[in-house]
Image (cartoon, rainbow, N blue to C red; front, side, top):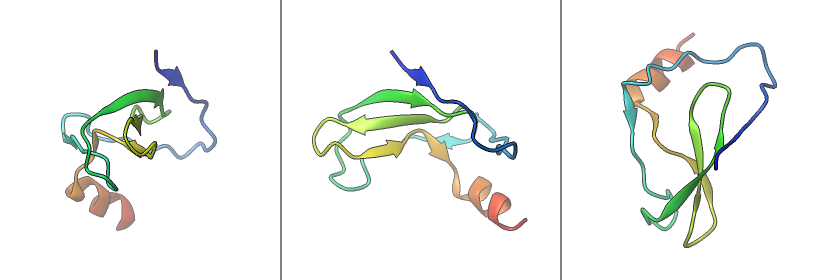
Length: 71
């Protein structure tokens, strides 16, 4: 079961959820993970079952990140 997190900031990015990229764990590259939390911007925080790292997957594409940080 995924726990929904409360928003901390009124400025929540409006991601294009159709332009998200599936990711493996960024440290051990394992694809074995569980969804743990749903962020207010609708991105899922996962926990790696191998190294216990928390990461976002699927994540915004490079295009979306560039657009966010260019503002």
